[in-house]
Image (cartoon, rainbow, N blue to C red; front, side, top):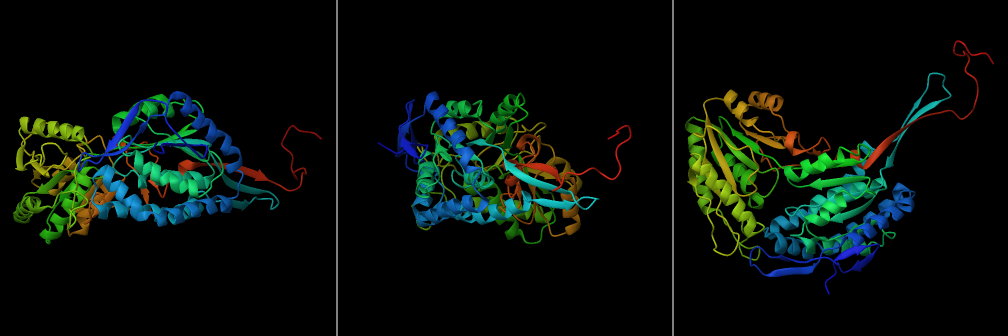
Length: 490
């Protein structure tokens, strides 16, 4: 029997439907098990709720000791977890190892963020005897719904800040990456946390829904699509006292204007659009280029470079730049979106096509959509980039903002004056200059506006939604003020 669900510091077998995960690069089974049932979800939530009372009363330093143990355990199995990520997601090993490295580095950043964002403030009052003090308190029990594209780093970016603040958690990973979650929770087990502080439940979308709407949750952290996030927002609108942090997708623009180093522009465009086989929420989906000699040379070089891009399994040597998509279902969806754009008038410059009849490997696509009267405002979650030619920078700005999403945006341009205007006009949470749209620092907030998020940025600002402020006016002695309010006689 596989280890499956970690509830109250015990590995238990699920009692629901069977499901498996596969290696998308080979089609081989990686993991098998069962979903939890409703009763097991209740037990996991109750486990976290019971643990909250004692966990939240520990000092920050005591909680930190446990998290340090977890990080040390993670370091010991870095190579094994990196391989598991590659097996279940198809990512090249260099990329998976980078993800685990980000997990290891996350604790130091989370400590810094907690001390910066969840600080204690003390200010003397006018009379000199009373003080105004602001402290921060944990919310309680958090549910965390994880994605498949960063099955380790993104959940970890919620879990560590939540635990540091004194919350307890129930984590449900993507059903496409159950083994990654299992490996990580073996590290939590070895850290010897008090019973019920962290809990893992496996299952499909139904399990995630049952967890999300559980009445005993104090908050939910979600990473995924706008459609699911929208339904969660509707449900949580009935419970304004609960925290909901939504991290959703993007229809992200990359603007190329008056460039000098064409090779650098091609490199950062590929990194923006095609890294992780285009399966990052920050990937560029729209390439907006001002039409001039440099712009045309840039597009020509981009097309030629895409033909030589190395695509393959993580076991290949030399290592590929990108691997397969997560599944054949993902290939079907993106292929359908690609064909729809062609039917609307899109012109393929680099054809999005299958490289294997059975496995989800795709050649990267580049589609000129300049002639389309209407372009669907949707997140195409794969290696497809839409090219739009424009006459000048002002039109580029207008086109870049033609989306209901607002996660990331990038400008490749040598003139800082254009970037100043881009920075001022763009409506997005991550705006980069002469770097990829996928570049994001854990030492900064990460989130978007519109369909991309609900103003609960994660990364460095995750500390904000993991604790709430308590303001107090305090005086060590009880005494009358020098001047009483009118109408009171004592």
